[in-house]
Length: 395
Image 1 (cartoon, rainbow, N blue to C red):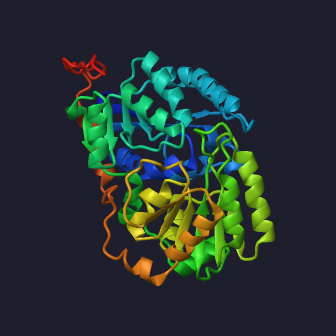
Image 2 (cartoon, rainbow, N blue to C red):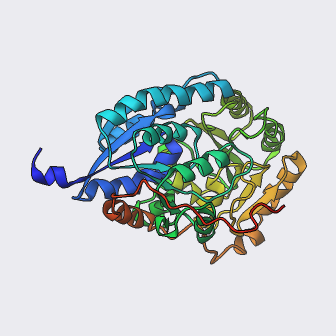
């Protein structure tokens, strides 16, 4: 290795699914272009699963240097399978991170698989940076995972000012916490979105108004993760217009959701199902449909950039910051249908003109990469304790 290579900062980035890869794409692009950075990608979980679209192929096509492909996802559709997936990932990551040991390891968001690289890096004394801490989603174990990753990490990039204050309130030193915005929004500024004609050609579907995008995931905080799904599917069966469905996350209960989604697509006219949509296609679709329905964070974080009406159902996203495009409803068929009718009304859409997305302006990658490339590594592992107030033991 020559002197120039030895001086480069080695930064590892972990991605586990199509969702987080779409958020990480522009930070990865800027890290790869930075002459002072030696980038390595660790891909695991659903990325390697044919059932969820084998999205590892997308990372390979984009040309990012993959240091390890971690086969760990159990196709069990249970919470036990989720727990075992974490264990398998830790065993393999221990060797992978020892073989190519980063100076910093970048993690994102709140997927349960992210606990594996975090625990492994902790044991190996590799400093960690974390994106999208300080947010709240009380209806999913994601909320607990996100908070755990925050406390394990040493550098933080939050999407909003409120999230930054929450991370600091959790005891993280303010100098470690940077408000960057959500990196998924960088697609709106940096990527070339598809025209309606190009989008229709890629999807193989002619979009007809009203077109509704439905994105639904298991509610993992509940013992029966699909308890709220009955109301959703009953409402979607009666919803007006065209329906475009996407696959759920690889969580406990996803197999049952996939079967129900396939059955709906097979019986309802003008209904289409997509296993996996790359980031540019998904963003382009958000810009062309008339509403998004479900419990996906994309309805809250990304839809706001298009002033797109979003019907947010049930408890999964409870507690998340919202813009005024959100219509919150319980998991009740009548309430969902009423909210869809309101979302599709010209008056509601007109009222969203000029709205601002609280999750950022599409410049997150620049902030993230600048900090990762320059933050002093000496002493980064050692956090200073938070002063304990005198009345801390009082109820």
